[in-house]
Structures are given as C-alpha cells and as structure tokens.
Length: 130
Image (tube, rainbow, N blue to C red):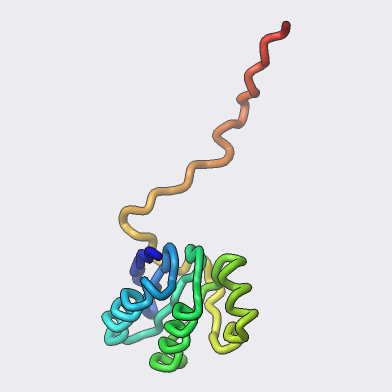
C-alpha cells in the first residue's frame, strides 16, 4: 500500500504522521523515514490517527521502532481499525501513548477545516410542490 509520512516539529521532539497504509509494501519507507529522524534527539511520536490499514509487517515495523527508541517513542492512537488490530495481536500494550491532540505545529501546507457553522441561517431549498 501507499504510505505518506509528514514530519512535524514539537517543542520536545518530532511527530511522524503516518497517512495511508503501513504494510509489506510501505514498511521499508517507514523504516527509512524513522532512521532519518532517530538522530535528531528528543522524543518521537508516531501519529497513527491517519493510518487506514496495518498488517503484520507494519506491526513488526512498529515493534522494531519501539525496540530501537525505547522510552523516546510513543504513539498517538490510530483509527478504530488500526487500534483493534494492535489490540487483537496483543501488541497495543507494548507502546506508550501520547494523548496530546494538538501539541504539534501544523504543516505549512495545512489549511483550516471549513467551519460546520457555515450553514447557519440557511435553510434547505424548498422542493417544488406539485
């Protein structure tokens, strides 16, 4: 599968946001990206909230990262599917979790989400009566 990785700077380290799939096809790219940031010092948070799929190779890659980085590594919880896979395979408890949701500096290209209140005052169009 395809995996995109965004690196965000935080006061005490880096966050890697994983977008897409962490599997047999993308695990080498993940390992390479992690290797690049390992030398930066500070903590490393792997944000799984945008990860849509993970397989056994992806789980193995996360466990290898945990072995190498130890207490420097923490995860941000993944989607329901990803968290369920981590729980069912018994590896969810191997990781510490970072519960901060907006501690990261947004990527420069990130745009604010449209406000859900944009429809205030508007009414649905009336359907023509027969």
